[in-house]
Length: 115
Picture 1 (cartoon, helix red, strand yellow):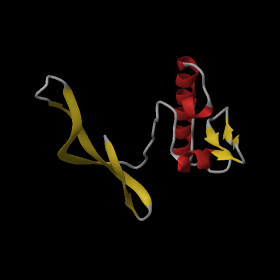
Picture 2 (cartoon, one colour; picture 1 turned 30 degrees about the vertical axis):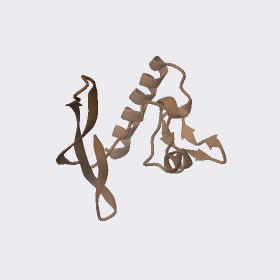
Picture 3 (cartoon, one colour; picture 1 turned 90 degrees about the horizontal axis):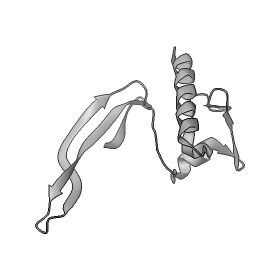
Picture 4 (tube, rainbow, N blue to C red; picture 1 turned 135 degrees about the vertical axis):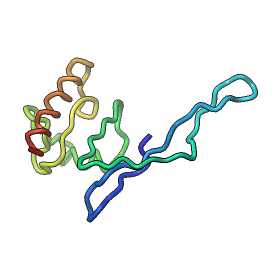
């Protein structure tokens, strides 16, 4: 489970992750929690996927301008912030097939952007 984005010179350099584990309970029910073990994964880019409604205001504020979506639907790239791509649930996609297609289009666009 990602805990924080590591940065170097103001840019993402990786993720610090913790392990989410199941702890047995005396009443027979499983409890979940974080272990004390943490790992750092180096990365040049970090691509996030929310998978459900996003409630993080900085992300919503970055994607929307005056309440309107500011994403190029052909590339899934933000029209002003060229290093930002979005698709799926946050754009109001109503079904899995379209959400998967958004991801496919965004991944190709990200590849072209970083190449």
